[in-house]
Image (spheres, rainbow, N blue to C red):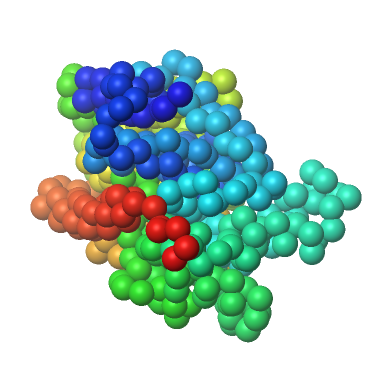
Length: 405
């Protein structure tokens, strides 16, 4: 059965049986989408849901097969907007020759530090597996080591980060050879932050190599019935959320911002709370709550991205002194705000001491009071998102690689 996207009330409604006859002359893209582990946190749910939104918005008929390093299923129970997804495991090395295009989608899938994390993760679940065996599997499935030239030429790498790499990774002959062969041969390589884009160019990627995080490509919620924003939303759990004292300081900062902005209340968005039974419905509810906020204060990368995409300014808190070592690094937030010229809305956690928090709150509320500044950031996001989507769509529509080439 051919699966395609249908449109219902202007919103992405998920996969449904194609009502058109099988003889339709339109091209159907047989697409392999390689994603991060099928986690149920809202950030990664918004990243993977964005792929279906891109395909529908651009009228690309696609038969999408989702893959990850381990199998999984994301239910759309209770959601009126998002579709369900099932992820097949990459462990058995799928035959990519059967696909018209291979899309390596988001996250840190090509970062050497992520590969080390994955080795430890797999060994905790399967201690009988040796590290070299796991590393071989990662190289085959995420860097497409050993794949044919034809396979690499139909591969699209979109929205990932490799800024975690350091000089030791550059001097790792196997890593540099694999990532260099992939990036120099792939149909398209676009990274979600400027440092990763610069690294990708050093590894052979042509062009500017800079995109945005895939979550920016998700459709905005409908404006129908949208309430006038009357509160400040907040959510902590990443950087400052790792420390009780830092969390208390951040919540005090939220209170000061609320008081300065003369908003009646502050509400905990509980962004990182997961619902394993109704994950997409939970994401939908969180986005609806964000849209009722005048602004959001968070230490969580994808909470900030989803807020900005929905048109709600997001003040992001992060440590400036942290050295990036793993995918939860603070630096991805700072890089995001720098590339969007939104640094005014970035607050360094070190500045949230009792004596400095008042000044920071006054500064932030003053910025928010000048709506043109937030509008400028939204424009930067719109321009960057539209540019990267055009490149992505052109790559998806490029068609299969001719046989024998």
